[in-house]
Length: 233
View (spheres, one colour):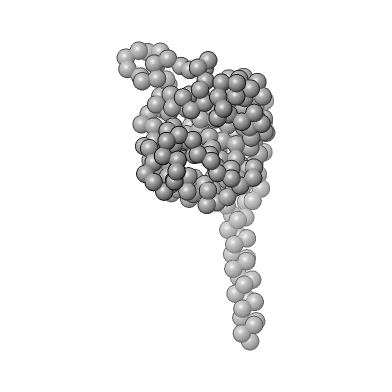
């Protein structure tokens, strides 16, 4: 009798979990700090990836320097979604880098030892981001604990790299002996984040002037509503 009860309970839990997965809608709220585009895109419904949503994300995470996109691996989107949910934040994911063409990656790699020549960014399997209001320490620990793949912690710049390659962790910048120590504060503004990211990758050819803002109109950016090209579907 006890065995039957155990079986019934097990089947009920299994059914409840599968029903929850089937009824789940996954979406990503993102802000691209380079293009100033913002988007809230559903990429998975009832356990099935949404083709239209995936196409929109492909374009949103494009190599903005070259204007080219690639198929972003859906597993990366699941990873970012899971990490974002675990932080408990409702703020948009601030994207610093999604896809990189080989041309862009080669240029960055030639200027910095911090850019891998065979970067996962070129495969659509990596993303660099931060979430306003979520400390780098918390974001790093959650990313590492979930073990989706590689996690790079950029202490001085306040962002993490997440990919779906082999499970591994690395750090760059000061205070990298232990992520349990107090981390540097996050970028206070998008302009500060851009400057820090440029500094981390040592990419002077792409540096923009007047990151600090001020009254110079050229340093002020307007947020744009994301619109995928009509042929992206």
